[in-house]
Image 1 (cartoon, rainbow, N blue to C red):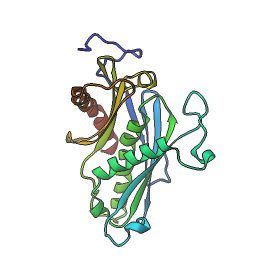
Image 2: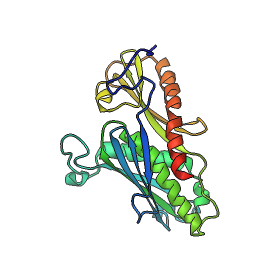
Image 3: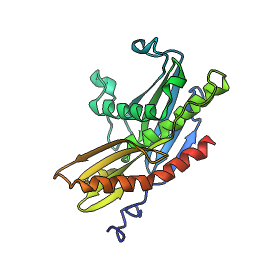
Length: 242
């Protein structure tokens, strides 16, 4: 359907941007990584606390959660910090909840014990796909933090059930595009953010029509395209977690 389509950056319609993950970029954090997907760059840091939030105490299970923000000059014009308005922006809240849900799906919270891991995801440079990059990079930071607990003999094993990663898919006219940059995302008729495990299971699908509604069969097509785009992400994760 899209075989002859070449995008502005030279990619095919079904080709993701180059991904690079650099682990250990914040030595004081129990786990950290910078993920770059094209021109999008996100710093992910995992912090371990030896207690869970008060509302979870006594349950014998752990907690994994996330915070997300964008540095003021991550975009072409300065974006005020959330603190300037006195509250977390609704977009940031939505994204950090997505990241938290995605990482909890990959974690054996019972085996984690009554401790919490906080993932701070800060966008250094934004060119589309910041939330999907944050999920993919935060998994690496989480894995490294869990590994540090094993090394410290606080855990017998790394309590992970699977790997998780995320990628975007856009619908422009009748054409599907994998891993949108900002210019594509800002003009797409619909966009999807899809989180999957390395076993091919779906963790979450976010899909929105920006204008006219789209046929329901496009959801399945978008999911299939996202699944094809996951393997380079899982390969990049494996390469730094060996």
